[in-house]
Amino acid sequence: MTERFAGKVVLVTGAGSGIGRASARGFAREGAVVVASGVRAESIAETVRLITEEGGLASAVTADVTRPEDMARLVEITVNRHGGLHVAHNNAGIFGRPAPVGDLDLADWQAVLDVNLTGVLLSMQHEIQHMRSHGGGTIVNTSSNIGYHGRRPGLAAYAASKAAVSVLTRVAALDHIKDGIRINSVSPGATETPMSLRPGEDDAARAARLKDAVPIGRIGNTREVVDAVLWLASDAASFVVGHDLVADGGVTA
Image (tube, rainbow, N blue to C red; front, side):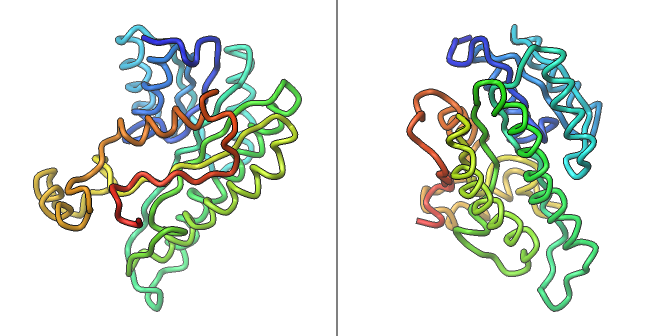
């Protein structure tokens, strides 16, 4: 355990699996008290269990990022339970069902934007409302290398939502840096999480598929993404404002 985030309360959305779970564990290993949030109670409870087993401090709060009342409650519970909110990693996101633009179901489009974009907006709004009246803080949003940085056929909803997150992050950063709140984003490429698996694909098949598609020659791992998140959230990045850090092995270089 290290102390980079000692005395800090950190909120992570989408903390029940993948990058979110790895982020929650990463912050806890570095001394933070972590609130792990997500829509599935059993998943975030497992994240808390893993953190506790490693000697960290964490609690779970079930919340849906698409519901304003849930995000208000999440921040309120975080502050009341742990005494503050200093860092937020807004990570909740979904991939959606791939389809060409001409065949894209409106309900699928709306679901992806609701979680990936509006969910980040609502999360930031309630986090900012607390932080700006309590000495500031840092926020890191999870975007993607698909969107602002690169595109893929069949992924219009996901790409549009993540491109918007990248831009929303930058505008929010300018809006609130004078409130003492630093806001940045991280844009991962394909990472060893369930989201990067195609239907019926296992880890070995995914690795083979991406070996030649990624200039570095392999898929990323969650630790590499989390290291970027932790740096952006830390004092080491104190002069970094409105940056979108791409971690994709060179795919969009």
